[in-house]
Image (cartoon, rainbow, N blue to C red):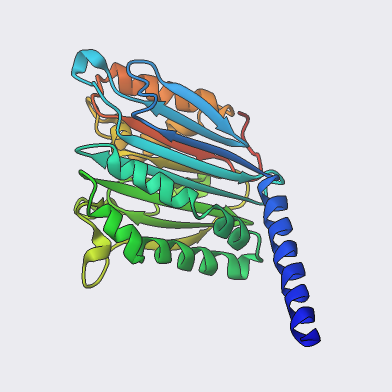
Length: 288
């Protein structure tokens, strides 16, 4: 009986310590979450900040036929600048799948914070396992089968001098760096037009299809840029040329100004589709 009491007391102290650790992590993380149906930002781009991360949201040009915004975005940043975690979503047919994805990822807050608080040698492996467990869980897949439509989803995390990503669908992430640009290297992933999360769900396949990877940052100034297809598929499609995209997002040292200018360009090009951008310069090489 005494042995059981001591064991229970040790477990209680351990659980209390773990809860305190998680609560301490939460208090040191900046957060941002947005769903396009809540704030559509038609005609006029919106620029928000989460720590050192810039989020640009634009719902499309009304005179070109835009009348909805089915994108979504989520950003978590360690207040000590040790890591950033970002999710960008482009839903189709309805916003339901984007809403489900945001809710599911938000439910992983403690796990993500704990994974990215580990040494970088273990952080991305832990994060990768956590995210795949979420996507493949029977509960999440069952909820996906009940929504209308599906989403492309891109998840990125930066810790120390490395960037990890997992991509499902046609959102794109670029690592913009002067030396990489000189060599013609821009995008980290290739857009895939037949991968989805939602009613049509890649994680219901016998072999789920997605891309994932890790890339080392370049020396000096780097810009991580995540975007939905609305940034690329507008008018004369100026940003489909990655060299032009690099110039647009590195022309000024003010990242927020660059994002706003790019989204205004989408408006000028009569972009109908929603365009969402998440960007930051690790280690603060650019202003906000």
